[in-house]
Amino acid sequence: MAAVSVHKFADCVTCHAWSPDQSMIALCPNNDEVHIYRRSEEEKWERIHVLQKHDQIVSGIDWSSRSNKIVTVSHDRNSYVWNQETTEWVPTLVILRLNRAALCVQWSPKENKFAVGSGAKTVCVCYYEQENNWWVSKLIRKKHDSSVTSVAWHPNNIFLATTSTDGKCRVFSTFIKGVDTREAGSGPPSDSKFGEQIVQLDLSFCWAFGVKWSPSGNTLAYVGHNSMIYFVDDVGPSPLAQSVALRDLPLRDVLYLSERVLIGVGFDCNPMVFVADESGLWGFLRFLGERKAAASSAKSGSQFSEAFGKLYGQSRYGISNNSVQPSRLHGGIHENCINCIVPLNRKVGSKVTRFSTSGLDGRVVIWDLQNQEDLLDYL
Image 1 (cartoon, one colour):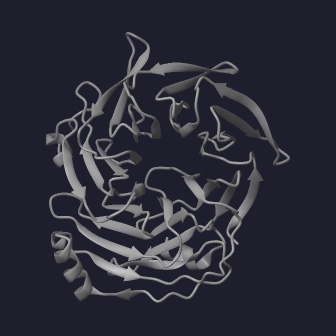
Image 2: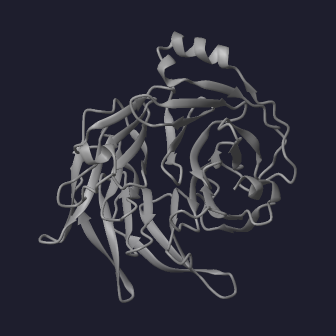
Image 3: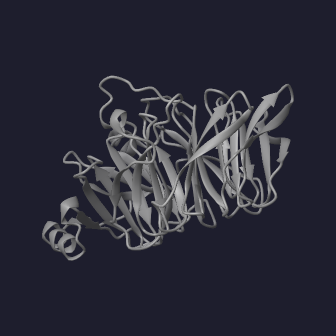
């Protein structure tokens, strides 16, 4: 087992985030509050703060690693940035201008912005105005046809990937004059205006969920509610994509551990490991909660993929479809759907070997891959 510790904080955990030194965790116990726990020397968790400002369920939390700020969003259409002053957390207002629920949030790599996805078919990119002591937002509108379920920042701090229940994954430029700087040799982002759509990926024909960039920003991965996971290289006018079909339940979120290893979590209650071979072809390896690798039959179907792409007008993506059949007798530590996965060692350019998952069973599980020899070879 790769799990190091298991903690049950509530009957259900909606989302969670870690402090920069991983000594504290902020989580939502499926209500309008955010609870902050601190780990003691005896490895016990003590609740030290309760953040109360929202009126409905908190749907997203992110804790900045540099500035030690917490941003929260809620179904009440509001967002707050929390700053620690002495022993208290003080909220700062965020002007979102939403008429539907806020669903997800993430700080940008430089932490001078954060993005909020919403049920209003809108993405809010927020930045701080010191004169008024509040966070204001610029909106990306009329690009999504349904709710925005997930957002992910590219390492360049400009590109933003989104997934939506309209089945599409999109990449936008979020360059804001006065907040971002145009760096020489930074490529297309320097020439893009705020809200400009870089690419739209029509690979999924159902709800699309968790999306993440690889550490280098060269590859994008996202999942669909049809038990598919998609890997996209060369994101731009002519992307190259692979699709991996699962014979188990759908995934909800993903996390890159390195350029060649990705963890997917979802309704199977057990993290799934995906790896890329030397040719760049992705496939399922095993369930993380297993002691032995699950048998799989990954098969590349280039001819079928080409026909599939032509049928749905996607031949330009160069899709390859790999079907895998994980073992159903995999077991797991979680007892309900895993809806959140967060890295613990987040240094830029480093490989992630420790991460945590939380789910509808109220458990937060910390995973460590240091003793997983088969995975360390891929990392």
